[in-house]
Length: 115
Image (tube, rainbow, N blue to C red; front, side, top):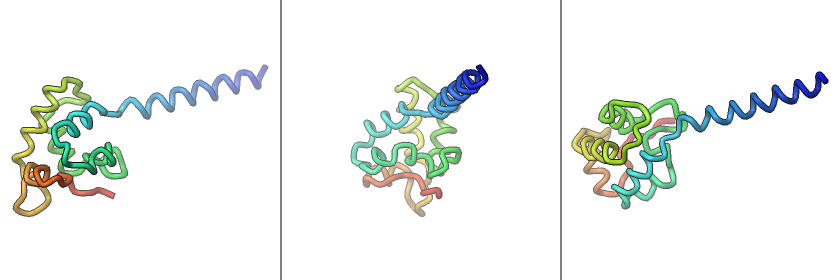
């Protein structure tokens, strides 16, 4: 009886733990980014790393600018995401003398890497 209860609790904890990890994903942002900037090949490989480093709780300068432009969490509207991507193209990147748009046009990742 006890073993069954322990197994049940372990199963519930495992299910809840895996669900919470997926809840923060923003695949719509990546889809819109890759569609808008097909020449930035690394973005498709980096996925979340385009706006984040290895620590997904941090944003690089590009991710921070996008978050500010969206002004909401987990935006689902593709048009709103696209507008925000276009809006921040004019902002200064970490590369001196270049905007995010300059880097994107050159096929380069716009954000500075974060370890």
